[in-house]
Image 1 (spheres, helix red, strand yellow):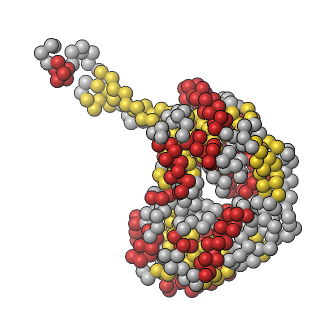
Image 2 (cartoon, rainbow, N blue to C red):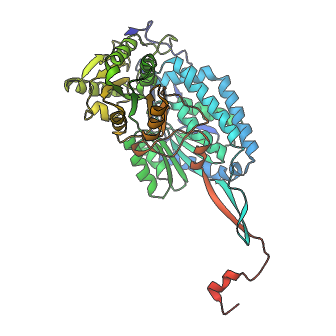
Image 3 (cartoon, rainbow, N blue to C red):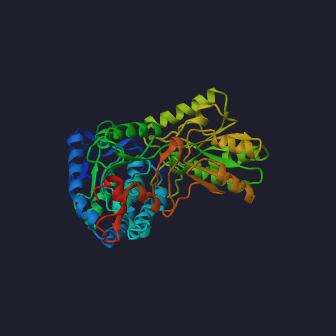
Length: 508
């Protein structure tokens, strides 16, 4: 494995010693909680600090969003679209600043931030700017001979959103922008580990013409701020991206008020290689899909399920390619893999790998942390893994790929579906009928054929089973932020309706 130099990296960010931890009513605001340090995980050095929010700040943000809702929901779609378009151009202008700030708080490689995180966020905003002008309902018609019926799709109200630390900017955009496009107002809680680009996005949105109170940010812990947001009576819809365990807690908190919930949770994506697959494509796809964002991606390839005929060559090819991956300085454009999010998380990943080693599974490459100061972990390939293994069944959320054999198509699809999760999967084959069968029979919100990871704004993202429910991205996401209202109008002008006699027949 190559380790890039020089090291430690320099962020070249001119961050103040402290920053406001909230954005409420169109202005920066100090949280009323304790001081919290934001740490660069690649160096484990603090880069700034903020005061986190408390339940009191959550209440202030919700009240601000509630006050802003009538005006924003009543704005013409073209007005909302204009603000979002302006925001997209502002983010485009400040793209490098956002990319470097994203790297500073996450430790991810700058190339990923520049070429995936920021451009993807800009594209998503542009998409919803256009989609906001196409909020269609069912056409008006006479389903009853005496009435015309139509459908109105109306903004649901105040949205509470809780986003994770792995893609702070993108997750904020995925949650906030469709809600704004639909006419909702938002209170968002980013992870206290990675709030910087979310706070900057809120500032940029206000500068782009978003009215005060429409987009609010409260940085804080899940235990206090997340719980306060999920259980707040002023929230009409709660959206959450994170682990399955926390998602279930959030859903329980929201249920006290009967709040609608959308959850995008964990994954354990199968990477199914059939015996007629293009081996080179599968090898390159497996390395890219398992190492993206250090494997800290709920759609990352984690379980390679490979035909016996290709198994040995696949393992050798993946190992050889992983060993050429450049690990180190996140700001070096030649670096492939930056750090994980914290030392504690790195140790959790390593613990799962070491237990797999102790269980007798073959660590083909990697399996340890490099000699670097931050939360780095080497790309790791574990072969000959059985279906009952912890590393096979549980989400690792690190640069770790397991490999096991399948004995044929039926066995491959059975193994792919042998999981509680159902977020994403891929199938690798040159046979059209195998591809069609895999896309039908693998239980996941997304099935890629001969690729794994690409996402586009026009198509939905979301899972089944322990991976949650509901959709981010695409116009399907509007269903999370809209209510459907049936409007029924009499077209006869008759005062005494025939159906009245079912209630007061003799009195007519």
